[in-house]
Amino acid sequence: MAFLSTFVGVGKHSDPNIRDLIGCTRDATALHALFADTFPETKPKLLIDHDATLTNIQSALKETLGQATPDDVVVFSFSGHGSHDHRLAASDTQLASLPATTIAMAELGTLFKSTKARAVFCILDCCFSGGAPAKVLEDSPIPRDPAAPFDVLVGEGRILLTASGVNEVAYEMPQARHGILTKALVDVLLDAQTPTDILSSAAR
Image 1 (cartoon, rainbow, N blue to C red):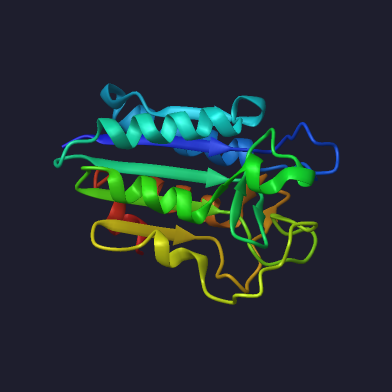
Image 2: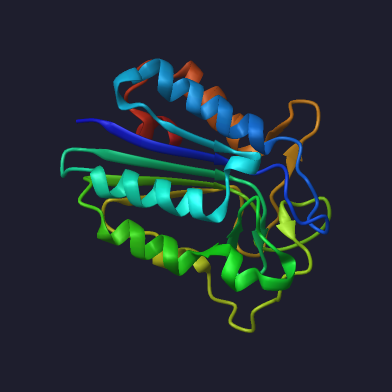
């Protein structure tokens, strides 16, 4: 069994109207370092700030999920802005063109369902509700459908860990310069007695 992983942290954006975030780069870098040290043979991918473009994130996801065998576990972590209409913002996301420059939950769900991996573990340290200084694009459209966006991601062999519910707020910790979820997850993994049991550790 191998861990195939991609870690994305988007703290800086090419659109000046999108607020930068202080902890996202450190979130992705910290998780990537843990996996690189623990599973060096798997060569985990790291995309941060201006390298975390929409095309690069999509390509990394397709490659990671496409390479997985039925014996593998895929880990995808995203720290950055979400949108009210349940999308993930890349470094080149444009507020004037959100549908074309973001990753929708449905797109992510389709990629997860297509993989042969034994399990997919998805970590979303972002926000889909609102309230400054939450990790959300405040100017994004608010959907009329109140249904949770996570249903397309979960299922047999697909595990989702989110910083907040659809009506809750996800924050960063200014002193630690991490998202609250990622900081807690890193602490748990560092304290885990069995480092390879990541799914059990994350459930603590």
